[in-house]
Image (cartoon, rainbow, N blue to C red; front, side, top):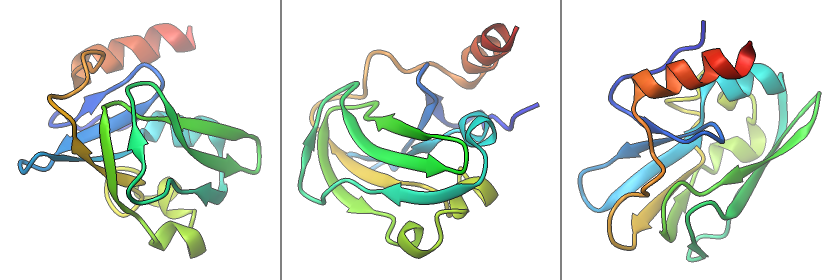
Length: 130
């Protein structure tokens, strides 16, 4: 069973969102997503300063199995990217909710309307895997 921290919000495209409490959110891909993709070999990070919209492709994670787009779960401006992933893309596998985060976004208004809580995300991935 995939790890699904209760304090985070999720998307049905398998991104997680952590509210930083200062108008920014930290974003990454879920444990479930990294498990499906397998060993990460490359992460294409977004440009700091770029504007992102809800559901917009903003990064790419590439594993030994496949490349997958990462979609912004919120609207705003990318204010930081996780430079550690350039040389250590496997941090996404080892610690998807910690050191494997992908970007921080300054919110443009509120959080995205398509975010779901941990319980609903757990139900979603269980149904998706059936």
